[in-house]
Every structure is written in structure tokens, then in C-alpha cells.
Length: 100
Image: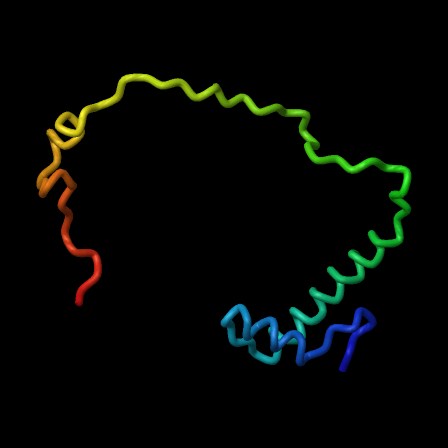
């Protein structure tokens, strides 16, 4: 049963399957109605003439405030590993995270 926006129960079920969620019949009807409302609004936005509006890539007028990279002294390997509980051949040694 397609709605005026063209979404069907099968399409809704497909979307739910992609999201790995199971919908009850009540949820199907609710989400079908909500998705239809969203798609109707998108169709309404498509009707707005934006040909005279230039694209905007930064709407907040903020600029990049990151500093330039600077080479500075850092910790030596020994200093970095000084407080490590376990070190083996220059690497930090940690407990297994995946059981074999």
C-alpha cells in the first residue's frame, strides 16, 4: 500500500531489516506515517526556488583556529615507558583483549 510519497510497507520492512530491528504491526503503522510526513516535508523543500542563493559551506563564519605544527622535544622511549607496568622489547605489554 504506497502512500502519497511512494513509501510502501515492503520498503519500510527493508529499512527495518537494514537497521536490524523488528517492528510490531503498530510500530509499522506509526513509522510508515512518520516517514511519510518526513518525505512530504522534503518534497515541500524541493519546491523552494534556490537558484539565486549561492552555496554556503560554512554557516557559522568560524575559521580554523588550529595552530601550525611545531617540532618540539618530547619524551624519550625510556621516559615514556618508565611508569608502564610491563615492557617487552621496547613495547608496552598489555593483557590479552581477545581470547583464542
